Image (cartoon, rainbow, N blue to C red):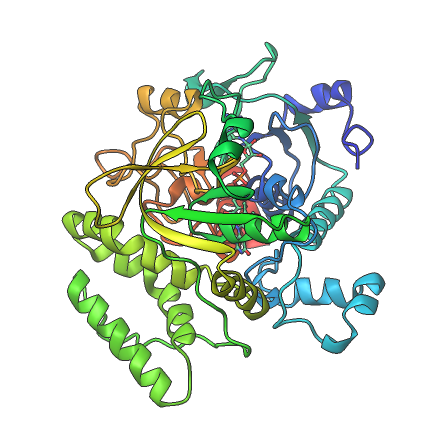
Length: 468
Ligand SMILES: Cc1cc2nc3c(=O)[nH]c(=O)nc-3n(C[C@H](O)[C@H](O)[C@H](O)COP(=O)(O)OP(=O)(O)OC[C@H]3O[C@@H](n4cnc5c(N)ncnc54)[C@H](O)[C@@H]3O)c2cc1C
């Protein structure tokens, strides 16, 4: 859907915005769109909202809507509601979607336990955004198709956003929702020479880098598109995502007396998994339960153990929390069993003309893996050296977290400074806070955080509303 018809015109906006709080959201991925929904539903008085992203379209989240239809979200419907306090909202939306009901009749009357394609979730988010907007005649929303390159304090507690437009107003509140950063620009790296590679390989060969959900998505997309050649997955740790259970795997985790150091935490997770399985439940239920305590466990860990976790255990944690729907897991296992897809563990080096330097785990020497294409499916973290984040750091508006995985933030995403204080009016929602808040890259956690920010804004700008 186009943007122009949906939003107030710039001149109408200009007349109105001077008198009301001005909010900016930088990034229109899922976090940015969710933040906009939460603001519209939580701040019940007029405001002006400006949404920045170089991608000119407005959808339920850029990454999710641009995914191919065939790719399935790895979170169940029951955990994907964008309505706070109504966990059935997505399920209800699916039930009222005639087309979807016709396509998936077996799941009627409810879809809570199933997994759906990403573009359906994106449609749902977009529809909830449109409805929230349609219900608010008192606000103005402006969409800007440009990246923000810097943020500075100006006129006291307000923020100046630098983008291609010289006319950005000053903002009272800025929410950073830049997730994994801007899409890659042309990198000046050496191009592979497919013709040269073809001379060196016996049959078509594609290399995928990484081992997370993105690799599995890419592999299955290639196969769905008819690619029958060899695929090699190269990964540092070689840990592919585990499987979901066929049933709901309701969370279990012994919450009393949680340990506060890494070895004891690991021991208690192993014990909980063993006990769950002895009682006929699954380790997946324990992982689901563990996620509910992940933040307090993380906060209590000493810094050196956070580093240890990051170096040695994060990949294991990720492969157990980001799980594949059973059918997709079975396809992946089938691929590996056929030998047409091979997983290799080791260090990935630089790219040459016809392949990639690779040092297999346990070997002291590099080899070259020849391929016609190399597709990097590794998940980049937030880019602290991007102009925008670098400007925040140099202005003293934010600090990296202890592991420099993102920004140091509190539960609501407010940047934390050296003395423990927060920066008023500035928020970083979603994966930007992943070094401070475990699982903040996942939909349920982003939804809760966005509403927490929305409620905070309502109280800050219209405190009298609290009593209503
Ligand atoms: C393919 C895929 C599948 C997923 N599946 C699941 C799932 O099943 N379950 C689950 O819970 N989670 C899932 N996730 C994870 C979750 O949805 C993501 O963590 C979430 O999409 C993050 O969204 P985001 O908006 O924070 O970041 P992003 O998606 O990275 O979006 C950031 C946006 O910010 C913009 N931007 C960046 N820098 C600037 C700048 N300087 N100025 C202006 N704009 C900027 C970018 O252009 C981009 O549009 C999935 C994610 C992906 C990508």
